[in-house]
Image (tube, rainbow, N blue to C red; front, side, top):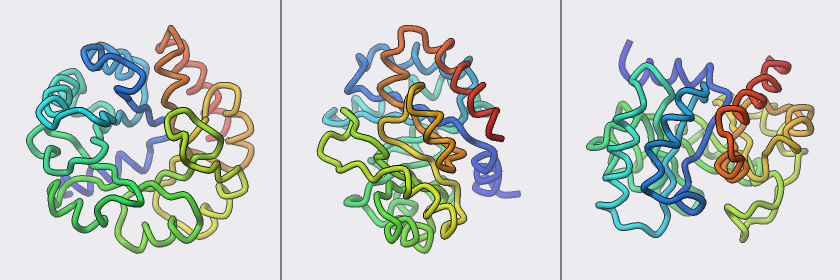
Amino acid sequence: MSLLEQRRLRLSFARFYAIVDTGYISPDDAPAITRQLVQSGVDLIQLRAKNLPLDRIADIGHRMRSVIPWSGPLFILNDHPELVSNMGADGIHVGQDDLPVAEARAQAGEEVLVGKSTHALDQAIAAEWEGADYIGVGPLFATPTKPDYVPVGLALIRQVRERVHVPQFCIGGVNEETLPNVLAAGARRIVIVSALLKSGDISAYCQRVRERLGQYA
């Protein structure tokens, strides 16, 4: 089994995706928060560092990688596929206005995962056709992480599930309060950003989320 196939297999079992976003935390705290996320049993950890110099992003990524076991959560970098190989990330995530999936994979390495953000059914179908290994579906609700995006609503979850076969991670305003409705709408994989990072107790928050996810296995 190739490295990409191994990563895709691990991805197929993943349900809880956490994003370490330097818009909410100090970059210096990223390794410690990453360690907490690893210990809390999340399945994917993404570094999202907008508006930072590339060398700073690379440094943060290296320090995060050092505390993520190779058998632990998949490590994903948001944007900057040219940094993926050197920092040892498992994958790259791109937005609708970023590089096509094939070009992102070519820059990041043929063995890495490529995820793509989608905000509508046609975008989700197109991302799978492009060869994305997984997609983000959202933002479901208004979110401070992406204030300029119009919420897509819960109905999109089931529409995408019926037409798209790669793993779908629902994102945007997902938190402990909205999670029951998100799962009831058909989601089986979720992303949490600000609510998790600002929770004050990442371990306890993750445990409660994982328990709720377990009810929808």
